[in-house]
Image 1: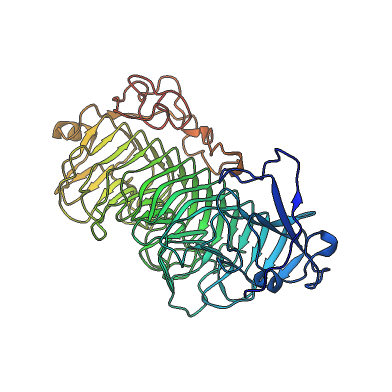
Image 2: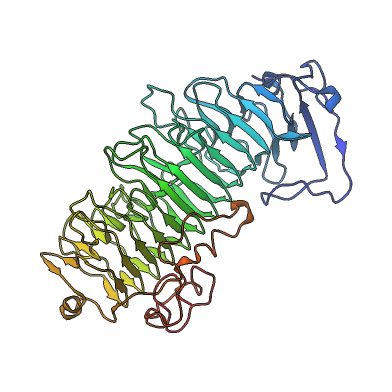
Length: 565
């Protein structure tokens, strides 16, 4: 796909003009733009819209000078798969980025026609400074991935990668394939056919990543897959990820951070995920795995669930810090109406990576574990965490009818064996409002800890529900609050109606992920009314972040729940 370098005309731009690099490097004062139009000709120079090229094959075969832009005509469709690598982009960096975008009116559409287990509509392989923006990328048949970012040739990091403002849809592992490769955006530090090269400074912003319908076969929205922890400094923000039905045996999530070190996942809306899944091990809305220092904040995750109804399998969690995740934080998120737990701490060790320390704080959960696919609104499985787990300032509410179940979902579920939580583990200042009902008219238990895990500090949590099934701790069930208090397992516990503004009225928020504000102040339903027993009844937690879900400075002492100020 290489061609002889041809002479190009460098168009001088005005002094001080900033190349729109979206924070990935220093701007330069010159840029060469190559135009592509269905009305063009591959024998043209490509250096103006009147001299546009015609085909994706011409783009693939050309050798681009440093700092080039490839611009497709907006509103037009181009068939083919684009490949950019050190052969046709031999000189590029985060400070002199190589761009692929649209010109004119609207977005250009790239419809893929390549096939195979590791095929991609647009591949950037070891091209530092690669930027894709303002395009529509559609699976034209059996292409596995929409956009593939990788480094198959170098042990030095490929830096400054950006996918922004694009609409990418319909990609998944080809039918019948045994590969797990496939999805809208693949971020690979793990080689599928060569060198496992590192990536650094990866930004995925303001995209729509989706399938055509809730039950579409489309795979993950963003699938990060590292070799060890070799994908560093990642930002995933402002994306809308939806209608990803996935394959029956899918593992992973709509947004999967695997092998990432230093990442922020924020201001994303994730919904209608995993409709076709019938196995365990998947899927989730947002998941980390063998990753370090990941902050998941200001996201709304809902309707991660099978469709049209539950038949088999488990998971369908909202947000999951999964095996081998360390030093990570889940805060200020709103999860609701997921078939499995709103929040999951999957505490397994992966290789030498021991899970934790990790923190979940100031999140709101409404009607999660709707299908009782996990058994709790917050699950800590499969065993006691070996490094500290902190859970504080969260609000959990459910009034989901579970009348076909012999037991309803618990607020907190600990499984599947006995064990002692690591020193420093704490569950404090959370609200559990349980109004779900089993076939016997009982709400879920506040704790379901049948194996008697110990070691965590329980303090100042508020519990409320009628016809409750109590607290299960080891072989004992404490049927009422007085019995729980008398057991001496928790200090400062509170019983009573927290007096939410509109309990159960959270619903789906109306907000734009690209605004960068998160779902807050929605849902206002879980702010506290004056006179609530939760007000001022919490205990101060060291290093608590300083503000609550609603952006209010945390009081001293704090309120219990996500409205802590």
